Length: 635
Image (cartoon, rainbow, N blue to C red):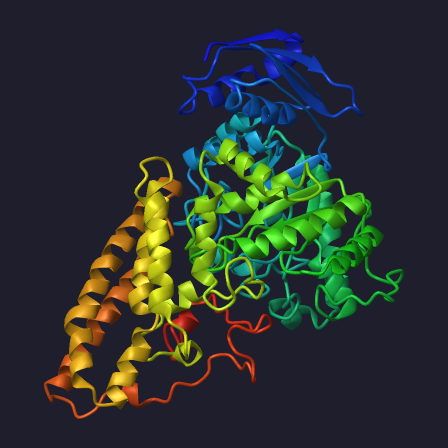
């Protein structure tokens, strides 16, 4: 495309390089030549784009609004149009987890930034527990793929080209077990995951964190974490100082960290849950409507309180929690979830439902800042590209009151260069019991049925009358279509195609083995050992290799070793299963004790069937899935 700019020169300078970077992406050479005329929009008028012939006039306040309209113009260069829109939230962003073993590599992060720009999002949070360089602490992020200061500075500059604010999202209290494991952190520990509040060494350490980051980011905003410190003050602090209420400890610690932020030039926000649970003594979302917050231990009013909620499917809960937060802080930020962390496969139905309800409540409560979170729970098993449908829906709702199916599909195509309907097939991997789009209990059978040991069948009790072979075979047939299309997402869909093939043979393998064993059906056991498992292993090998390729395209190498071990463990146990079955078939052992074990329910569902909307069949901890024995025992 022959691209020209006219109009306000300051505006042109602010977006020209980013525009040409978007233009340089694939499939833009065929677009018609266009001249963009840029004008400053008034503060209350929103942004607009009007295209007539070869000229597109864009009025905007901030670069993020411009890039959203610019991307639309690139995809609709052969038609005239008139658009006008205003975001509901001045600050709207996305947080990527770079701490659950996968630290996205710089190339992947730049790709994400470009997509955020196309969606009109203006913030990118990097969640880094210990995955950034702090010169005074060489063990901080060791062997974890931590970002160098140069990498963060380069990414910050790249984000600025698109009007995206790069915000560090760190931890200054809990979630630091990966660092606290090392010998040189001994003086900093309260428990194995929490810093010892009140310690001079701890505040010197936090100052080192803040100063290191200050040299890398142009923003003054920082997220200081402080969530889920459930054992606060109950470890070394208790032994040294005696018992104190966690509500008092969190307030003191917050005050001290705020002082350090002010001294190092940061404007902080933090997760809000510790302030709420420490004051109520109950669960985060269980604050009664009648609760009087006037006597609570409260943070300074200017400290941003981040209300995180990825779960609730009732809008009244969001309204109530937002009002509780407004009683705590003058700056309330909402963080939703895109449910890419359900195991190996995303849960788009849950993400779409929660985002619609939460953002509607945020609009009605006048919230100004929102961001979506993309966590990588339990080892980053889900490839990064699985974030895009949830992110697209969240960003769409920052500009629209509701989801409009046809418009959303076109929007996804324009921003992600892929078909939404292909991505939504992935929702079916965990919809075995509830149905696609209806898995609000976040069942994740694609994970536990992949990893469970076929000789133990820990989850087999719940597969009664469930035809997993037909279900996953049909899904594989559907996924084969995008898996055969060359392009950016081919390997991504290829991985999920082979995962579906593997599940079609492995999901009920333990059921078939035990049924045949109990019936003394030796011919079936022979077929399983000589035909079924060898074929399964061939598909598993391709799936494993595909996941490896995706990891190294997406992330730094650190952390893949654990996913490699997990997938390699499936292969090893299947091979062991063959040997055990052969030993029985050949008469070398009289029985297989593993198969004598009664299959017990993993979850206590009462009279509810797995298909019951309220029945929760979710287990996302690999070490609990693979065995009834301890992976890590006490010493």
